[in-house]
Image (tube, rainbow, N blue to C red; front, side, top):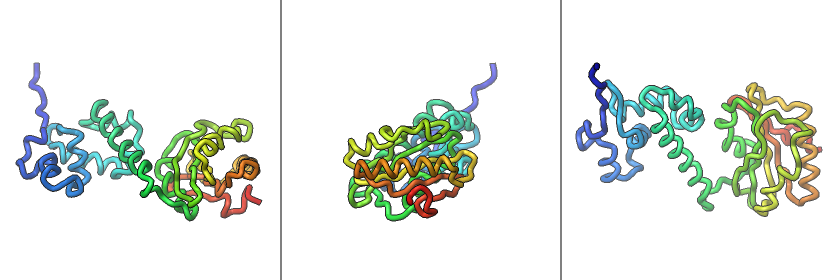
Length: 233
């Protein structure tokens, strides 16, 4: 049998360079992104310690945004990662996302289509299926939460008004913003997109929940139907 490949651990680093010890001494804010990820990875691979492996991962995936977007299966296939480490990384990223949404004083205020798109552009622009999400807003246009209503091919016969507004009613939302993506990467609204928007705007008037906008997300770009005057006449 051949010799096992050596695994390079954080403890192989000098004490002053170990991320865990640096975090304890200086606080998490003093660590680089690679050092924080290295704490989750715990071990490296042949030729790369945990910090170096984290740096390579960030480079290969395009930073933290790429780590957030990459599917779990693809993350598992990265050299030196595997199912356990991929699960730890995905869990950590998701906890960070949820924490940001859970702090009322830090809830984003939506003042423009750009503000709304910034919340979902990178994530939804990389999706291979159509998704329809709804941003629930309070009376000050602060985000209450984001819900996913549909996944898959969207058309007027599939979308039910009650499902789109259900959580808005339960959360006592003052207004909503509809967001869906085009997997083709082209955010040009289709005639069906306009028809859906018109139906939802009318329903919102009846429910006293204003539909502020409907965004179509493409690859690194988006279109605001409200700004184009489509479905909001």
